[in-house]
Image (cartoon, rainbow, N blue to C red; front, side, top):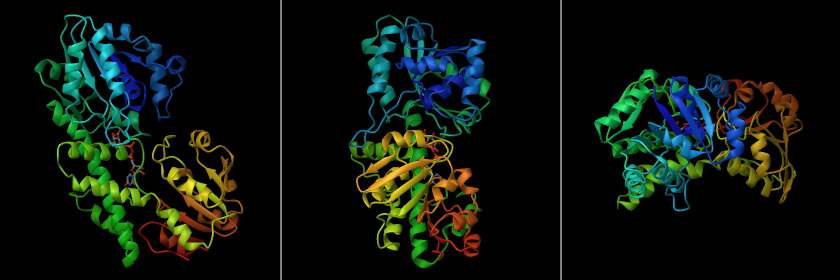
Amino acid sequence: MYNIAVAGTGYVGLVAGVCFAEMGHNVTCVDIDKEKIESMKKGKSPIYETGLEELMERNYQKGNLNFTTNHQLAYEKADAIFIGVGTPEQSDGSANLSHIATVARQIAESVVKDCLVVVKSTVPVGTNDKVEQFIEDFKVNDVHIEVASNPEFLSQGSAVKDTLSADRIIIGVESKWAEKMLKDIYKPFKIPIVSVNRRSAEMTKYASNDFLALKISYMNDIANLCELVGANIQDVAKGMSYDPRIGDKFLNAGIGYGGSCFPKDTKALEFLAKENGYDLKTVKAAIDVNEGQKGILFKKAKNRMITLSGLKVAVLGLTFKPGTDDLREAPSLENIPLLLEQGADIVAYDPIGINNFSKLYPTGYHGNGKISYTHSIEEALNEANLCFIFTEWNEIKETSIDTFVTKMKTPIIFDGRNIYSLEDVKNSSIEYHSVGREIVE
Ligand code: UGA
């Protein structure tokens, strides 16, 4: 078993650290945020992920998982240091690598024995080479420090499960030494390991995410056409899904992809292509379609109503997808400001996203409109004129159509997640607008 240090305790770093500990390695998670470290020691995870706190607590009690702000101590004893810090998008679409550089510098100044540095964060192709050179330039002791790429493929909301039973582990290595160590570290996971060079590993991450983003944008594009020609996108997707070359996943049309990954990674790959003098037309198209898609519910509502001013609007779902409290690039953040600008009176429901959303939009007036929050779907719908569904939480999917009929003043629904079957809707008295399907009045 290995001594592993993990830099960064966000989705990537913390989940990796906890899962390595669960597999028997000795893990120290490092973060600059003292409060975060202290609360993790008390068993409180800074992120909401099913099963994470339980594993954190168990391994911390066992003594093979530790948390510290002292990077020096953690890096000194490590055989391998995994970097899982953020690479946020910059205004030009490129990835900001300043956090990676900070950690690389700390590693160069702390390491006292041979060590493998493993970049888990999503980074542009060629970054691992640069990190290795950077560490070499700043290295204090005469030790061998090599860099390997090991991109992360977990999805938020199912991060622990995705890590412990991933489809594959990609390792990008430039030596047998690095390959052996990474294969040893991952051996207990019993997951197929694909070993390639560093640049191919870095590219695999972007190519995979951008392919999925493209798949979603393609379905959204087809959905918009379905509306115009009287086809039903869900039936079309079902028919497509029987072809194993297409598969049955990521065919759901809706209000565009959000989150911290697809929007950022599509733009970063387009930027990388541009930098290299290449026009990456497919990914550009995916980005374009997504930009348009995020606002379609608002457009539909504006076309339907003379005015939104003074209307009571129920919003169901704030987070970018179910199972997370993350709001990054969430469709709610695109649509709610537009509704407020129009003077709507919003009551928003989300099972866990309210805390984060109300920090951005506190209860009260914002321009012409106002917003308040509730932990009850029925209360949000009470006397509402319109309802917008932005996130397909189970609690929302399980709400009967009857609840909309009995609670709302005028049951007009704009569903961005195609939650209800048109058959059920047609047997009710609601007015229902969804994506890529006919309007039911
Ligand atoms: C995504 C990838 O799925 C992971 O494999 C990857 O590791 C991760 O990014 C990352 O790079 O860290 P995530 O952003 O957590 O994971 O969420 P997804 O479940 O992929 O959903 C992304 C967006 O696509 C959501 O807004 C979701 O609503 C949307 N989506 C997904 C659709 O609109 N239609 C679909 O059929 C599927």
